[in-house]
Length: 587
Image (tube, rainbow, N blue to C red; front, side, top):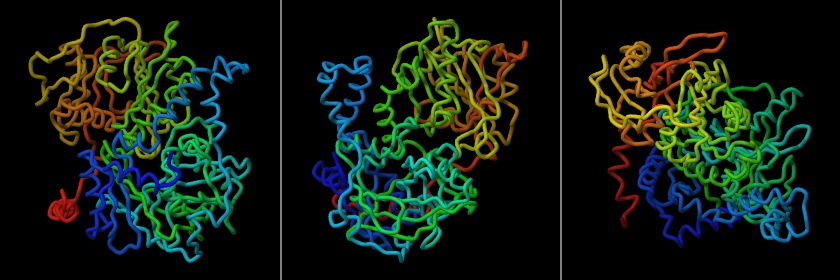
């Protein structure tokens, strides 16, 4: 497929999926709001040619629809993964007849990798300098409380100080000044592991920051790959070709030959600097915390470089479509990496880490719980906050159907496990302490144990002003805010056990109308509760086993100690509305 950004943009033009905006647009807040409105309408990619105060054009919304994601990669990678996984029993041990039958996918795999090309054939080396000025980049300030401009599609390459195994990750980059940025290495990220090893040796870690290049690199950088799968090899598989690299002087790494920009430098040991705030993909601000610092000393770029960017915020944004593509692509690998796990899905509306669902094998009593432990011990899935597991085949992306299957089978005394005091996603503040939280596992296995109600037909619930049903068995209610009545969820437990036994799941939220849309329900319920703090049920302890009874009450109201929801500033909203015809004069 596409070996650089340019060929992808050309395809988008031909397909009518790219609009050029020649009006002067400010990268501080204005450009991001235009992007958000277009992506909400499932609109095209946007090329901004006249960016205020900056010498480079900006392209956004490259992957903002399912169709554009498919344009970037086509069906071939998915087919290769399915064919090879489906043939593993024939490949081990390999037989000549089996290898011949699988010659097409095997040849595709054999073509993967990197190759060196000369500097004269590497567009990224057209301009190079050690006099770097990062402030010339049209980096976006997306939300008015952001700590400054951020590089939002950064491809950060590092190598382990000893083994030289590489990592390509997407870690947001806050630009501090001409030569210095933040490096937002979260606790579960490969680049952070490399920096940890370098710090133990009191060494600076060489870093290569790439902006632009093959679209496959963007997807590979955020893919939850098994640790043994190198990201550059995976990017090559998505491209269907080897990745062109070029050796450059005075830098520890080769660089991507067809990138738009590349910056070289180091992250020194034991240096931290406040980074943030930033409106992130959970739909809230992440607060200021100390993170490592990237010191940039070299730049390479195309002479006519284009700066790609994205905007994150309340789902669904561009990252949602990339995440769903990756899940579909990698899903055949789950049963290989985790035998007994038939399918797995994480929900983009919850920021992916807040909620996962799985279909597993249940061939003996509570085997499903063993598979749940296996899932929670695998790579980025270790940061899953709430995991729901069933042995009933279904389409996990249809959450309403999946939740109904769970609730019809859920037996609280047997099927609920809360694990206190665990690590938590760096961007999830529901655990009350940075990087700390808890986990919940909820099973729904075997035959149904109850018939679920579809509509609430009971009397009013004390203290509750709105009552809605999200799906059979799941009630959504709202009343006083957390500040007005922080204990109402706890008090509701007794009432629920007496009057709401047929509703195994009750969600207390600030506005019960979120039950009308699956995306709103997922975002609200699972990004605003911590299992240990905010899940209430009648419980007793028997020989170190906590036995839960009756309905579960999830307190998913906004808490005063949570960071704020990202919202467009009224002045920017008014500005973009007033200029809309300038941006799109032919629409």
